[in-house]
Structures are given as C-alpha cells and as structure tokens.
Image 1 (cartoon, rainbow, N blue to C red):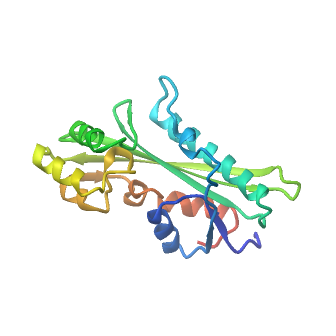
Image 2 (image 1 turned 90 degrees about the horizontal axis):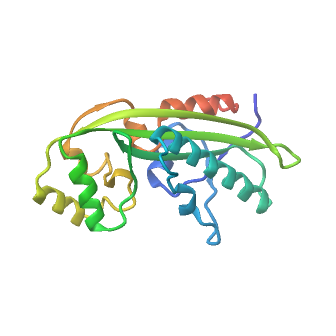
Length: 208
C-alpha cells in the first residue's frame, strides 16, 4: 500500500475539486504556469475521433503536470488529470469561442442525443524523475436535449454559463431544465467520473 497521503489535481475546474472531495481524498492543486500554453494541448487533430482525442489530450495534460511538479521541486505524489469533450456523431463540440458560437453549438444539440466523453489519467514519477506509472480510464455517457427554442438558447447563452464549457453547457446548472434523458455517469458529464476515478485511486494505493 502506498504511503502517499495526497494527490495532485491538475485542473482549474471547481466541479472536479468538488467531486474529488466527495471521495474523501486529500488533494493539492497543480495548475499550469502563465508561461504554459494549456489551450494548445486541446487542439483537435485532422479527422481525430472523439474517443482518441479526449484520451490523447488527457495524457498530454498529465505529462505536462508531471513535468510541472518536477520543475517546481515539489514532493512527488500521484497526479490526477481529466478532460471532457462533447461529441455529436463524429463531430467534436469544444468550448465556445463567443456567445454566437455557443448559440450555434446549442442549436446543434437541440432535440438530439450526444455523447459526453471524460477521460481520467493518473501518473507518478520515480525518485529519478522519470515516469514510473500511468493509468487511464474513460467514461462515455449519452445525453438527450429537448428541442430548444431560439429564445431559450438566447436566454441560456445570456446567463454566461455556456462559456468555458465543452458543448456549451453545464449539466449541473441551468441547462438541466432542457435535458430529457441521461444514460451513463452524471459525475462524468460534470467532468470527473467518480467510479473510474475511484478505481484509479485504488491502483495508486488510496483507500476509496
């Protein structure tokens, strides 16, 4: 059993912090430096499938976080990263660029069933600073939106909630009023699937 008492969470998302706290695991934030181009890690490659995309991005985030921990001279501990993407068919719907883009995304989701894919990865470094172990898990959920009127979309976009969210909505927010059906992991749709995360934590010696 690992003697590690905490995990580094490499995410700015308050929702991921909240979900990790539900598991009773102590964590320290390991956020990117201003000099790091975090958004560059999320660029979609040509013809990249949603599943391959979210898994690749999560591992890139983990690699960056492990390097950050080493560079800062922090005590070595397991690092937890996660990434969420929304896919309508094979089309990846990322975070909206502006209000107009958010309205376009929501219009595409209106009356449709889409997938929410959340990948979770954990990794540690050896004492020499080289990667010692990495593990990854994937949660895939289906979400169906009711048909949305133009007024409903405009009102939701005006709330500001869609900004910074994959698929331009937050399941735990005002968008819940428009979601007809969910099949899968609610916490995964929020951004950190509890079941898969607990499994990874156990692999790294945490009692969850």
